[in-house]
Image 1 (cartoon, rainbow, N blue to C red):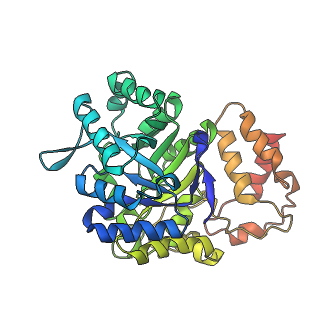
Image 2: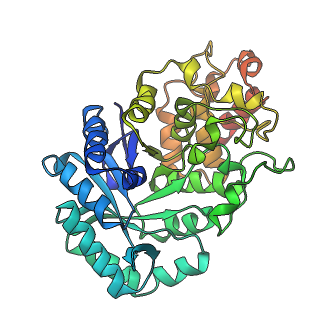
Amino acid sequence: MRYRRLGKTGLMVSEIGLGAEWLERMEPEGCRAIIKLCEEQGINILDCWMSEPNVRTAIGESIRDTREKWYIQGHIGSTWQGGQYVRTRELPKVKEAFADLLARLGTDYIDLGMIHYVDAEREWDEIVSGPFMEYVRALKENGTIRHVGLSSHNPKVAKKAALSGEIEMLLFSVNPAFDLMPPTENIDDYFVEEYDTALMGMDAERAELYRICEQQDVGITVMKGYAGGRLFDEKTSPFGVALTPVQCLHYALTRPAVASVMAGFSEPQHVLDAVRYETAEEAEKDYASVLASAPRHAYSKKCMYCNHCKPCPADIDIAMVNKLYDLASMQEEVPASVRAHYQALEKNASHCIACGGCETRCPFGVEIVERMQKARALFV
């Protein structure tokens, strides 16, 4: 298992994480089996947004002897009322639910205190300037939560949070299908049968969010990495082709600022299918060729940082140069941190010999030589 730094939290989290939602459907024995296997495979981060009491208890019992090995994303604002899940900002109910989370997990702290599920800009504005945020700050000040995070599916909300100075990391929905979609306050909008052919590449708001997170050192953990499993079947995939778990994971893990993908596991084999990413060959990770040849896609001329352009005779990490170029070009001046990352590269755009071999291998027709020239000029 490889580990990545989760932004300014400084936590080193496993590339594959445990999105615990499926555990809600299991008996305690099944829950324990999944968590034990995750531990054996080196997974060290789990997300528990669920308010249902039994699953919280099952998770707590499963990690009772290994609590210190886990980084827990625990959600603030996810409550259990009248036998069902309710998302709320009513502080008495929020506090009761969070105390229940601590008690059932058998811990006196949560590593990542997540402001739960904010998809409306107005709601974020009210949260950040009101008593809810005061409560979250107090939790951090007294050590009950170690870091403050936010979960959202809306890039506009996530951008505001990343720029607020209050949020250290995000739980955000990332996959090649959702990345084409414009911002929405209704998560159901992302689960359409087929995407509009007028869509032209990654939505600008989402691309900007990833760059802002990289610049602000706001780490991202990923939810909906498989688009609810729809990407595994050509009949339900909006692209008309099926992707594998490894390809979906590679897509998410090649986005800027992403540290870990919270994958859902309903049986032990699903854990092994995800963890196989760590030993997969580059050809197995190649989502780019699949998407480029799909009946429906809108990624032409857009660098996806997929490294399909390798090998470079000058040994340039083309994907990284392109990523840093995109991060820098959105600003009036090149951020010092981005310049430093660029200068630290052993080989950069100035070493490009313009052979064009990379362009023959790029499945999306990116004009790489021209981008190298622009990067060289930008970083001079």
